[in-house]
Image (tube, rainbow, N blue to C red):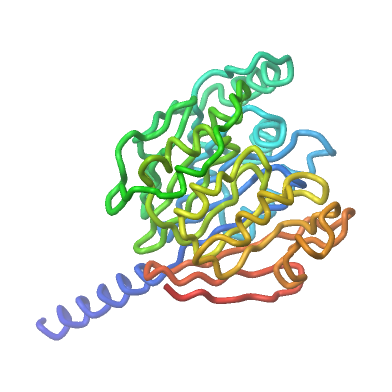
Length: 336
């Protein structure tokens, strides 16, 4: 009996170790200058941030569904819509027709005075009928099993107190230009910090500079991160240097399009950030030339008329990340 009990304990220990060894998988899906990022926790639960565009013959919904199938995901447990612009929320109705979405998460009603966002919000609400829906505020947590997903910004508000280990004075604030006011949905983006063990991933949607600086000045409320999802596709009205430099990210991934995002000044800010080992891009930025594009190995799509290749990340709880360009299979591992 003791032998059988010992064997049972050994098997349970092996099973627990195997479960603990499973990595976090992240899929940066090419939605041609929009955003669609799929996180698959070691528990198997899934979190999708945004759905790309709604046009183009179901292109973006098809690409998301294909990535989910590759990840072994048949149901999306959680879907965060950062804000109600076409390139982030447009694909919701088409995706909802393809696969089950258990919980819809957003910052609340559309606040932008435009027919476009009003129509997008109405389509989103219709798609969410019958499903669970959460409206989040800064400080809330999204209960993805195996991950700590904390909301840092939503509906024009940001966290007011520093996260654990953060709160250091930020000397860059003194030289940061006063940002322009932004009345669009961008500044209401629901932004999150995703933590898995020692790994920290920051995604602020399309948050613009005034709200970014609320997180960075006069004190850095976030602290350092390991993986930075470049804000607003690398647009010039986001990516304030006082924030980007304070993050001290080891890797940055820019979900730009061939002719969208990757603004030269924002690209340079991210590229030159202290501690950054590599910047990866979803697309070659056609208007930038070689001077402000990274090397081909670090770009998922080189041509404007592309096959929609993605960038994937496999992350361990010790903070190790392996980033892969699915166009070529080139990958690079970053140890903590």
